[in-house]
Amino acid sequence: MKNEALKNISIKELLLQLADDDFIHSYRGAEWLGLAPHIEEDVASASISQDTMGHAAIFYKLLEELGEGDADRLAHDRPAKERRNAIILEAANGPGHYMKDPDYDWAFAVVRNYYYTQAKAIKIQSLQSSSYEPLAEVAQKVQMELYYHLMHWKMWFVQLLGSQHADAVSRMKAAIDKTLPDFAGVFSLGQYGEEMVELGLIDGGIQKKWVEAVTPIFESVGLATTFKIGMAKGDGRNGVHTEDLETALETLSEVYASDKAASW
Image 1 (cartoon, rainbow, N blue to C red):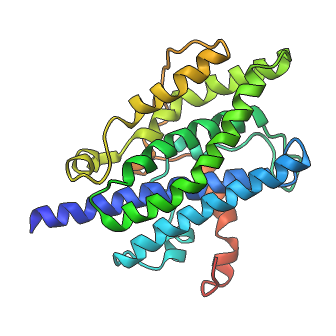
Image 2 (cartoon, rainbow, N blue to C red; image 1 turned 30 degrees about the horizontal axis):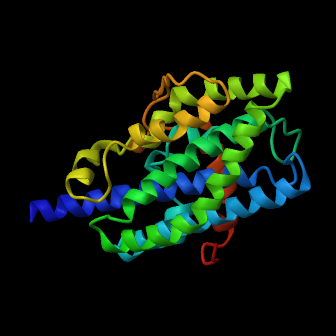
């Protein structure tokens, strides 16, 4: 009985991590609507953000089926301390506000999107063999969309770093330096991580596989491949978050708070 309870907790914690990561990452991507470098990118990145929110909805729905409450409530009506997303994903796109004087950093968006999408692709590949069958089935569907997401952000990453434009290269390197100190949070599985791996819910060593995947890309643009990846601001899997998440959740929950019977 104890082992079964531990398994249920581990499944729910993993689903919360997957859902919350995609939920806040999609929101940060959506903030670029109308602000992307050109109209084609505006359409492409908006489509990717919409797909990502769809993935979050699927994971929240699995939690609902496990008796964790309504999917809409899980997405919109939980305080920051209950969220399991990685801290780097909640970081604001830059100074200002979407509706007033936004001064967002496209280089940071590209770096974060490429890094996260590569990490997510590795996780989803692992989840296709998950011992939790409903999650394995979902992973197979998500994988098809992720192929195009990863191709898109990898192209931006390589083109900007491989360009002859000094300012673009400088901004990208600054974005890399900003992202890596907190990016280990994406690989964390939280306090039940060992149980998740032992139960066959997900593979261990996601970070190692990520480094192996991005190393040739770094080499192709002449970057060092020694990655100092950390969790400088803490582990979001354990409910540690920043003011950026608080602010984002206030915006995200506005419609839901006004009519909790609405669909999202």
